[in-house]
Length: 258
Image (cartoon, rainbow, N blue to C red; front, side, top):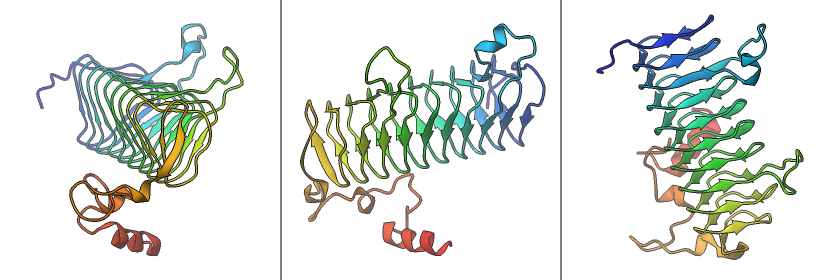
């Protein structure tokens, strides 16, 4: 790794784990914990102080935790007060604001803007240029494709924010807009460019502006083999915990606590 150890630790209570590599010109502020075997590339800011830092001499930076074996690529800015599970991967120039709770084995693509006070589960995939508004809840195994927007203000401008909730295994197609307060069930597929302004139940295939349920995803045929593609967990395993054993076998082990 061709880093020159030209980084700065600004402050106290910074806990850097074993075998961590930190790139040049990266800055790490107070109260940051970085897990073992993590790589933080060049020109990143970890634990970026909040607004009061600039006006209050007694400011205390909230704790920031980054899990083990993570890879944070160049020019990432992660504000203080967020937690990340193990094996986080980011693209370049992401921004993550305070009070973000992100699970393990997640990826956050280049130029994503996460506005803080959000929850993201495990094994989620956020592709590039995604905006996630405050109060959003994204559960486990959700894939979100480029240029999706999670909104949160039904009567702008106001402070009456309503976050979007997306349940497990759902896929949000590129360029979709999710309106404030809506809830999308498990195993849904939101077609590219949809504007989703109401709730949808599990296994909904949603398309259009406004988004409408046009079918059941379980009826979408596979393009590569006989049968159906959804639930997608039976046809896709790259990077997932059921890789090599199959989804059903993984569920059995998970349910029995193995």
